[in-house]
Length: 114
Image 1 (cartoon, rainbow, N blue to C red):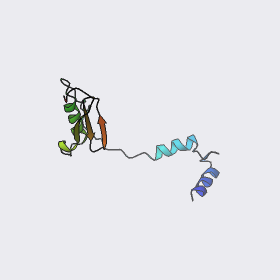
Image 2: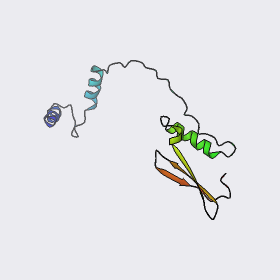
Image 3: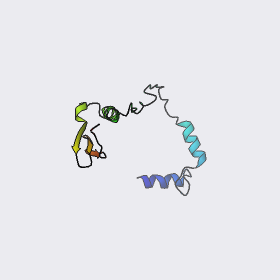
Image 4: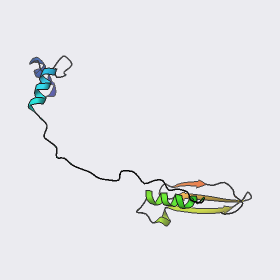
């Protein structure tokens, strides 16, 4: 059906050899078939996203916790991040697991837990 329509329009001179509308007929069609006016709408939302949490006094755990709570606000905060500390010959190694993602990150050995 589409092919038949293209052949018919080309025979009448509305389409060129590439089946594109000729400029004169396109302008006439646009002038006679104006698009309906859209109602004016206004949308007000957050202009700027919240800033990434700052690390204050070297407390990276608090900044990570705040970032995780922003990412998953419907989850209880104690179920988003899981921390573990392991004592090895080199020192204490801390790791954090981001539970919703299933990813674990391991730190480097330190002399103390802090």
